[in-house]
Amino acid sequence: MFLKRFRKPKPTTDLEYVAAYRATGDLAVLGELYERHMELIYAVCYNYLRDEDEAKDAVMHLFEQLVTDLLRHDVQQFGAWLHSVARNYCLMQLRKNQAHPKTTLVTNGVDEIDDESLNKLLIDETTDSDLEEDLSRMESCLQTLPPEQQTCLTLFYLDRKTYTEVADITGYDLKQVKSYLQNGRRNLKICMQK
Image 1: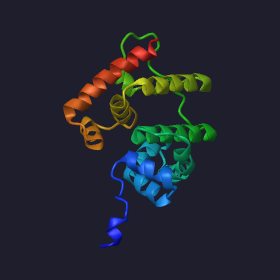
Image 2: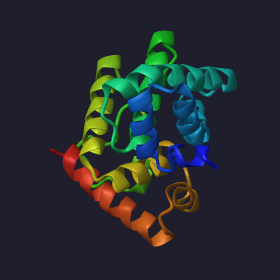
Image 3: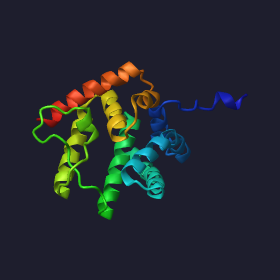
Image 4: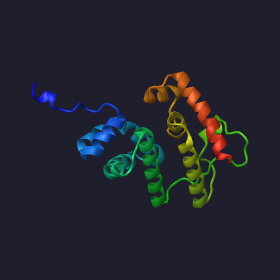
């Protein structure tokens, strides 16, 4: 009982975990935080790499990368930030292996980006520089959106989650998810047409 008075309360939110890790450098704290997101990160890695073993390796490498990255970056939206880190890591792995699909965004002069177009963000063959330019443009536009819209768009379109799955992962109700997706699509379209 005496020791309970001097123990610090255990972190409960992602931001509290990040702050605790940055303050102490305790890998156990980072491990607990990462474990909360591990299934989602595995899904992201598998979605890009399409190989179970490579996806598992990526999950482990990403944890090792977080040990230093979290100390260097001031992260406010850990889930969205971690998703971006995982996606970028996988894209770099694909480039290294030169086995990535040749892709481009579906915005070639089209006035509207509908659901089908966003679902087919990765469709036709282009050069590596075009791919990188389009992906960079999409990522920078995505970063300008409010965090709720970023998260919902990423989960729905890039991770191919259903409305219900997005609601379960984020904790938003179904109406909020649909609203964030609708507003996010509109804002993403406006940004990408600039």
